[in-house]
Length: 220
Image (cartoon, rainbow, N blue to C red):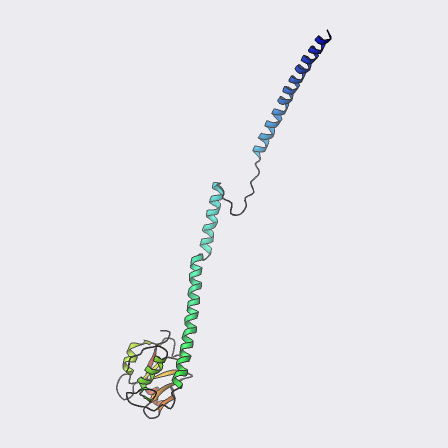
C-alpha cells in the first residue's frame, strides 16, 4: 500500500509538472510573438561605419546624387593634378628663361671692347651677327650666321622687348642689316663698326630711326 501511494504520488507529480510546463510555454509564446511584432514595426536603423558596403537602394541613390553634386561643383582630381602640374611647369619655364636671359646679358657684356672685324665670329673680333651668334652659342643656342637670316628665323617678341631678345636695325642696306642683344633698361649690346662691342640706347636718334623690331630666341 505504501508503495502504491508512492507510485500514485509520483504519477501525480509527473502529471502536475507537465501541464504547468506546457501552460508556461503557451503563456510565454504569445508574449514572445507580440514582442517580435512590435520590434518589427519600429526597426532601428543600422549603424554603418564609413567605407562599409551597403546594399540598400536608397543609400546607393543618395551616394550617386552626392557624387553628381560634387562633380558639378568641384574640379576633378585628375584635372586638378594636371592644372597644378602645368602651373609648376610654367613656373620652371619662367625661371629658366629668366636665368638664361641673365646669362646672355652677362656673356654679351664680357666682350665689351672687342674690336669689330667684318665676318668675325670669335673673341679676336666680331661683326654684329657674328657677335650675336657667338654669345648665344655659349649657352647652347644655334643661330644663323647673318643678321637678316637671324631676323627671319626667330619669332617676333610679344609683350614688348625683354632682356635676351634680338633687336634689329636697317642700316647700310634695306631690310635687317644690323643686330644686337637687348639687355634691359632701353639698352642693347652690339658689335659696332666704329667702336667694336659696345652698349647703346634704343632711344638714340640714330638707332631709333633705324629700329625695325625685336625677335625672341629664349622662351619663344
